[in-house]
Length: 299
Image 1 (cartoon, rainbow, N blue to C red):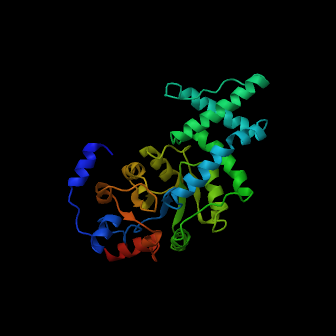
Image 2 (cartoon, helix red, strand yellow):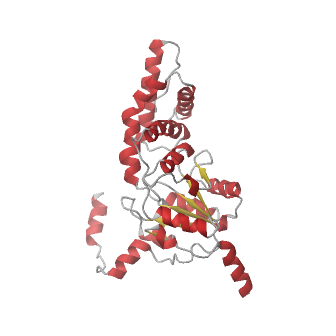
Image 3 (cartoon, rainbow, N blue to C red):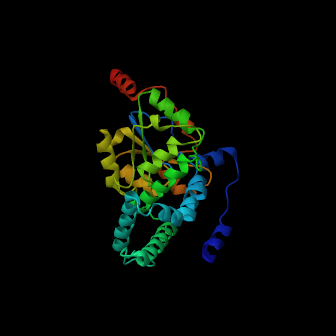
């Protein structure tokens, strides 16, 4: 924090702490009780929404960092690994004007192969240090996590309120999809090998960055078209404001999730979007089709 901002923060008079005041700051001014009205599809982010950020940052990402060289050495001759390397090489060429980018040379002989392997490792770490969401990186990460999940070294973590809420949404005729920066394969591994067991049956489908970046409005339009649903009948849950804005611009209903460890929301964020701390706040015992029928009968 700059000295100027620090001095400003010291001068600002804080409101008295009250239970009602704390609730407003945590939940925002919006009424979330009707968020599911007319909703046929619930679209879920993963990190910071269904799953703790700490699981991703403290387990998944460190696993890649510590095992990427070993993974490449053990699987170098396999077609899948070579496809990952080719994708990273192509991405590096596209990034060649960026500061610090590590280009990947051609693999012509054994000596060159050692240089390529080191370059791939350095490129992966550079991408991860920059918290990039490029498909080439996510593809390699997904392949590495697959072995870790299948051998029990990693189990996907989900918040305890997630599964009961999803089951209720399904019971009321809604569908649930996932949209994450992580590859579809990585998503399926997390939910297929979770601490709650195999949860894949709960989801009607998965989307990743091959559909488009999560900060681009067009990505959400593509998803709406893919699931065959008007954007206005889709509710997107995410912890990231930069994702909430384009989804809303695409016509979707949007709600921010507040979870432990998530980046704090500003007062402006909470005034701009509905906010929940648990999926249990989005309970509904009425299906969207029944809801529309009741509304039609009332008119």
